[in-house]
Image 1 (tube, one colour):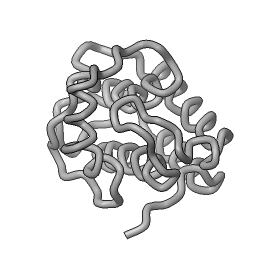
Image 2 (cartoon, helix red, strand yellow; image 1 turned 180 degrees about the vertical axis):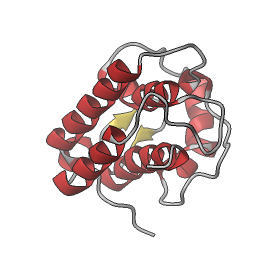
Image 3 (cartoon, helix red, strand yellow; image 1 turned 45 degrees about the horizontal axis):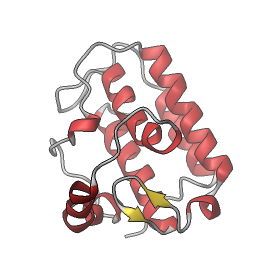
Image 4 (spheres, one colour; image 1 turned 180 degrees about the horizontal axis):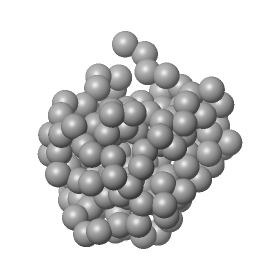
Amino acid sequence: MTLPNIFTTDVSDNVIRRINQLKPTTAANWGKMDVAQMLAHCNVTYELIYEDKHPKPNFLMKLFLKAFVKKTVTNAVPYKRNTQTAPAFRVTNPRNFTLERNRLINHISKTQQLGENHFDGREAPAFGVLTKDEWNNMFYKHLDHHLTQFGV
């Protein structure tokens, strides 16, 4: 299975259209997060790459993540509903819907503009060096999972 390429304008624009269909009152089809928390949760992926906001995994944790989690995150197989969330990605406090939505759209646009060649062979904080396809799968699959969770 090949996932849509988030680095293309058409795919990133489609994801952004889906995000713009969300409202502060959009209810989840499953899970515990509200829509603003979900947007903040999706922003964590980009914060790990673009901001120095979260602690990086230590050597042993990175070894564990590469061995046991990387494949699940970077392959093309969709996530199952109610999959356990990594601690860094847990969002339980209230969030501002508009702020989180705009941040996510900006992150997606920045990633698309940088392009797949920028990411190909670049190191991910938790998984080591990834190919452009692994980066694409990680970005697209996570967004699609949560947008589907909220019915868009």
